[in-house]
Image (cartoon, rainbow, N blue to C red; front, side, top):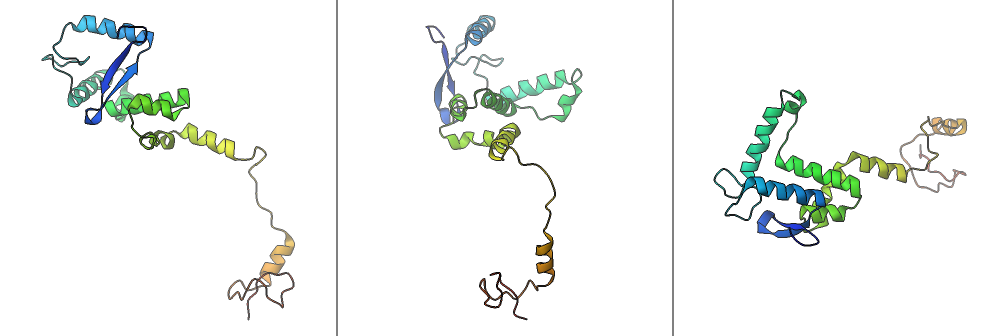
Length: 180
């Protein structure tokens, strides 16, 4: 964490490691946490009651415990699924909305491929709406399709099955007609 560009090493799935830069506020908060935590014989920032690195299940337990404690003040929490994975996903979605750059989100999450990160594009309804707004012509408005009287007359006088070909010599309009 020292030096002009403070960072931490994060270990992910398959023991892959990556270095993440820290904002100044995060650096201050992390230093304050380490002072409160005290010394530990492990390089992990977060430790359990025995001073060992916090496991995934240990973190899940802590999150669930705090959700239960918060439910009396915020009853809507009881209807929501909150887990470390959901918190990670929420962080990724917030980062994507803030940066509009899937590559940055992939780097932050430690994804080795952008394909792993593309799920966040599919999950964000605001991204979908913005894409639709950009794709639709600006003057397109809702309305009802009005059929011309000539088309209705032509269709009502024709049988729509048994089409011979696109160029029926007896049909001067060039449209296929039935043979009966």
